[in-house]
View 1 (cartoon, rainbow, N blue to C red):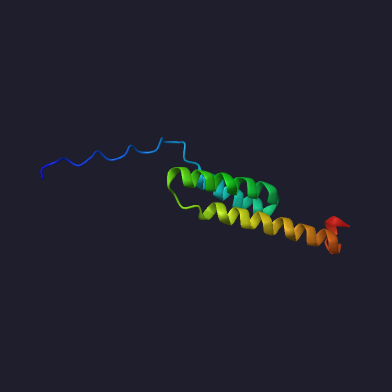
View 2: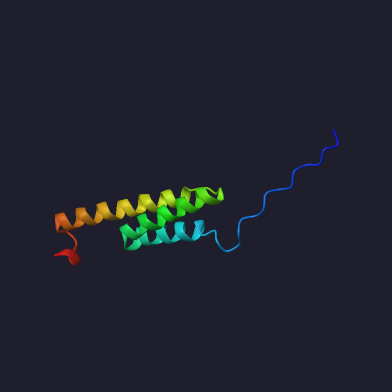
Length: 86
């Protein structure tokens, strides 16, 4: 009845968790310029989120925005309606 509680798990190594960094970089780059980089950083964010027990939402958003950027770029290039792609 008087058994001590087990010790709490050790905290994650400080400075190693880059979940938010990868997610924000992926969203910004996925929206602005590079859909492929958005997808890559989104994957890195999801990987780190699973490793450190955090929410992977930023990674999924980064991947979604990267895919949307790629699809929009293909449509604009195919349609020829954008002045940069003429």
